[in-house]
Amino acid sequence: MAAAATLRPTEPLPLPSGLSLAPRLKLLLTFFRADLSVRPVDEWQLKSALLAFLRDPPLSLPVLPDSDLSVRSLPDLHKRRREEPVASGVLHVRDLSFLRPRSRKGDGEAEGMSPEQEEEKYFQWRSSLVEKLAGIELNLEGVKFQMSVEIPPSDDFRAMKKSWENFYASELLSSRNPVRKIAKRPDTIILRGVPSRWFAETRISSKASTLVTHTIFSTLGKIRNLNISSDDEWGAKQDGSNKVIISGLNCKVWVQFENYDDFNSAVKALCGRSLEKEGSRLKVDYEVNWDREGFFRNAQYEPVRNNLEERDSLAQGRKKHHTSRIESDHRKRFRD
Image (cartoon, rainbow, N blue to C red; front, side, top):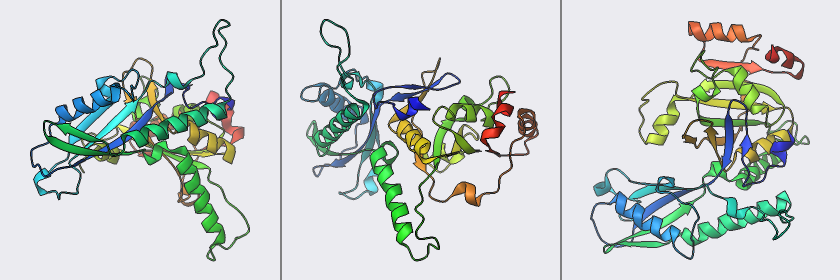
């Protein structure tokens, strides 16, 4: 539990089943026309110009491969107004080693820097990079584009924490709240866009397993309740269409922790990281959020009694949702 609580922003977090949370910075890019040109958007040219800008001084981002920047033009450009965006992109900065404390000359020991100081250094660098990139103008053979930059809400821990503090503060002051004097705090995270097969039992099923998922998230804190469901809408959302191509590829996970501190540490560890698996080149950018609706207070769910029962339900296709209520005195059953 202490590993997640003291995790530094540039430090990876190993998880069971060969998984790990790898630190990275993700920025959402939006491109607008800065002139009266109506020429089509050349994605390759736009990407090449932006890569050159990022690799050269004054930014000089270290180790930025071409694959960490994606640019694509938006559909129906001829129908868009002048002030509307014409292209979008995603920038990943995965090598954050330059932000870690450096070793002192001679003794090989790292410079003294607390996790709080390293965290502050990371946020200052991130803010500085966003300010430098926001509003830049790219000139592509006479065609000008202006770029805006945004940090995904799912990656901004400080903004997310402020959102739940404001939410419960307003709820506390609301006259509709019958227990006005009792302050509440969140305890449940929602994770979307994770591959189901990474949370499945190897060589048994490709669907996410409650037991495997519980083992993985127990690294982040003590779990009270857990729920898993298929998330077919995620692929369509990322593709920009409304069609589900293949069902069951991704899953959506609700995790309720036993206390607020574990919840807070888990959200902090999940923000600003990608999920990776040993032996796979895939780097998964999931979406993490906190539960405003009180899923486990409102939903009807059944406790999972043993692993065999879950396998039977998967084989017979009786359940699309795999839910569990996991109490501290039931942990021995998961070891059996």
